[in-house]
Length: 96
Image (cartoon, rainbow, N blue to C red; front, side, top):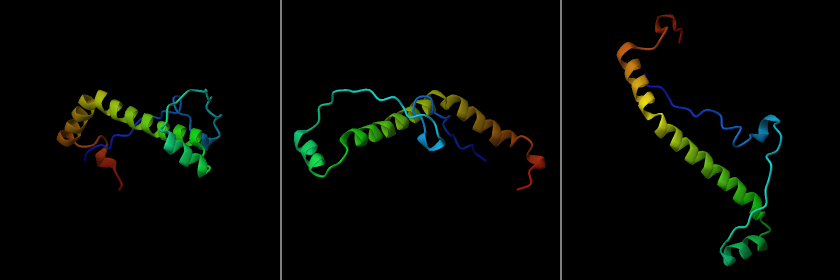
């Protein structure tokens, strides 16, 4: 049985507002966006700042996941090899 690799919580870097944590601090920044896309977004009354923030948040999480898995690949492979060779710890008492 292989172990599914899950990422540690990144709440400190990217707070999860669903659990009553305080809102992340926001900082003004300058972006260069394609003029035609920006004008179309404004015409559709889209919140460009919110959309950019949400998309950047998603990209940051994805990149952090990729880097974490890469940095821990040796450990994950060794752990999976140990489980395949020796089985799960306490498997004799498993009830499911």
